[in-house]
Length: 68
Image 1 (tube, rainbow, N blue to C red):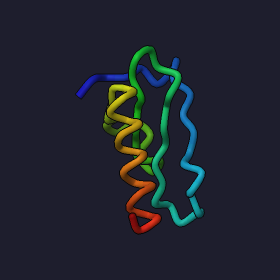
Image 2: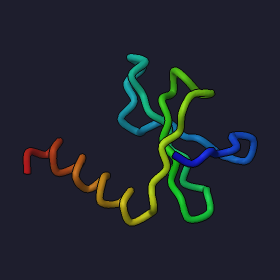
Image 3: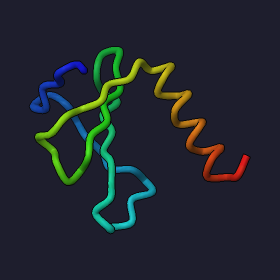
Image 4: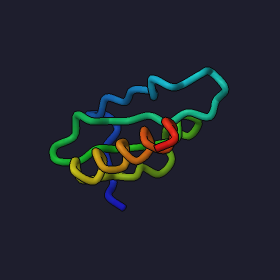
């Protein structure tokens, strides 16, 4: 896991966030990485993905949600 300095990172909540508190936040303004964290624990661990791996992950989630 790579450490990400949150002072220079802009986090945004998932567009699917429904206010239940079970949200993730994504930082896609990192150089060559995409960050993912639990919105309830902003100082907790951050997962980082290569952009291509992130795109594959997102497409997989979309396919799962659409039943494909």
